[in-house]
Image (cartoon, rainbow, N blue to C red; front, side, top):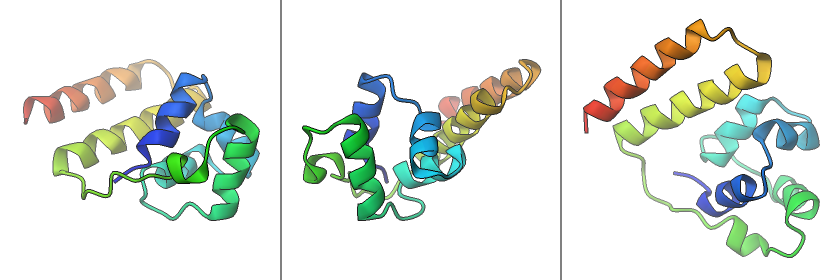
Length: 111
């Protein structure tokens, strides 16, 4: 479902998907899709990320996948997170965040 270790390291080091997207010369949405294993992350891309942000980490550790298929709830929350990342990046007006929060609450209530 996702590269949990690389996502955790990005968060721990305060590296946004926007910074990764600049490094890889791709959209924030594509970075999110790659981090959530919806589209492949190449070895070359992984090395660039490691070299730029975590030079002491091994690729094996960073690219360890949880390997599980996401539940419908996890998939919906992941999609909402990706949308929120894009909203943040492009400066979407706050009114849309309320709708996003309502959608997230609906998904979380459905546990």
